[in-house]
Length: 570
Image 1 (cartoon, rainbow, N blue to C red):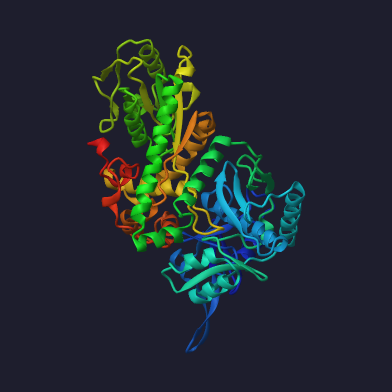
Image 2 (image 1 turned 180 degrees about the vertical axis):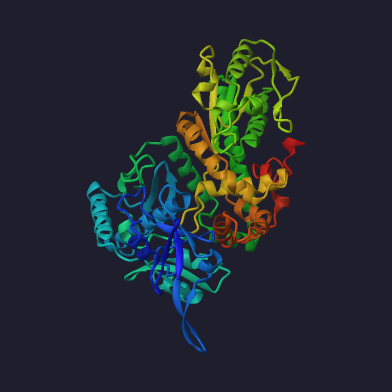
């Protein structure tokens, strides 16, 4: 029977793995830039150990049958490599398996938690704050290297849910036991290597030998597992110190402990018991307290302007409004300015090779006009600020005339607020307070499965795009890679330059967002190129119990920016 692998038509034997086919066609490589890690079949991600054709028992006897996914794909397979988002996630899961297997061999019975990603590294804690020496770190790296060199096959196995719960309970992984009790399906897929069994909520590479590029460093309070470099995946990324970002993650974890909600099972328990309402009140109070502290810092600085920046769906607009409220407590009358009004008319922009405009690029803004306006405002002059008409995709004929003084600070929000290209040389930088906001969740599925921070922002954006713009899930997903690329280039490099970083995550929000997004995700058809992305989000949200508590969410909550009902926008 014939299949098409990356455009190459080939005969496939019954029982032959995708990995066997890849090697037979000369498509395998030791170079991580080109090495296939998994496969895309009919929109879904499959391990390379997948067998496309297998014998099927029928009353009339045995026959060779093409698997369901292969039939749906008409025999076409696309290989996933490290340079794709899916391939990147496959590699990370495999690398984590190797790390955790090494930890199991060296420190049996010790709890290891994958806390969060910071820069190119994954921060993890060992035991109850166990401090590891450099000698310990070297031993772990050596054990990981032995596991990689052994090239051990990662066997995928399906367990009945009760059997999985029994196994993880006997293995001491109570975090997984609690989560699995909320699983809606009667089975659970795990990966096994010898007597070690674990799961990473997605496919992995076919064997441990694929996770050959990594580094491990001791960090205060834990370990940092470094992924391959984005510039050269054949080398581990170097560690770049991000003290402000790391500090916010630590604060977020402390908030989670304070609210007794660090994993999804904690949140689910609260939803079912009704305690989620108390959780919402405390979480919102922590946000309000932090906004008040930021206002105090701005006043103490004597800042005349505040710039607020952050990636897509971070809650910049609501953050700006809530900060303005806190500044009014100090007797100020802040003036809110959006950088979106400095967009150039669309006919002045150059489309990219795909014919689309890259709206994440700072070149889409009228920087000279903004610099002139800011300089004049800081000198005390009255200025007519532009207004951008997003329907006509061009600037309005008339703008907004404003004047500021020491009692009326500017609060400027937009994607590029921290970019140094934006601020004119004539303005004293000491008079500008720079605030970076982002949704940096530290709520984990379980000890070994963190929730990527981009997941929460994507959920927010999908809900908002559908609620306010009528955009489909597929439309939002089609833009997301471009949005993420723009963030990597234009936003993340400047986050440590901020005077403060504020985490806009609300620990309860996935349970609320689920109601808004779940029906939309289910409408994505299997033939869609975004089916696997939608399916992975569905699988993720399946672990959350839906919370119908919108009457408890304040009208000024950051979550209201996405689900509606925010009183700042009336």
